[in-house]
Amino acid sequence: MDHDGLLETLLELERRLGAGDGDAYRERLTGDALVVVPGARLSREETAAAMDASPGWRSFELHEPVVVALGDDHALLSYRFTGRRTAQVGYEALMTSLYVRRDGTWRLALHQQTPL
Image (cartoon, helix red, strand yellow):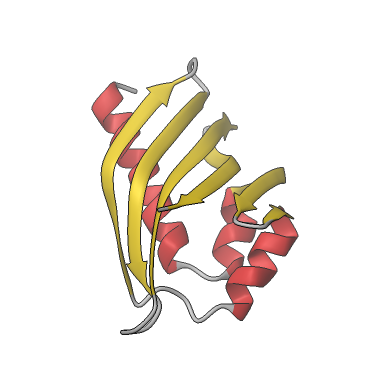
């Protein structure tokens, strides 16, 4: 896959996760995935449960994406996230996701957020 194709593929996966519920995370994350957010390091199931308990994003955008291929089956995606859960509650962070391709499917192995 070329650079632009890889970037678009991974951005689409991130958008689906951002718009998804816990089941979206259960489907996309590796079994041993870690999600690092302010004050916590979550397992796949903890992440999915947190998403099930959250109100979800009313709107969000991914800005300034950068992808780095780490071989044929590993890639790093980094971007600036802006989103709103309600009209009053916004969130902005730098986010980085590490994807691995297993059996032809990209899976999220690590996701990290740094609030701005």
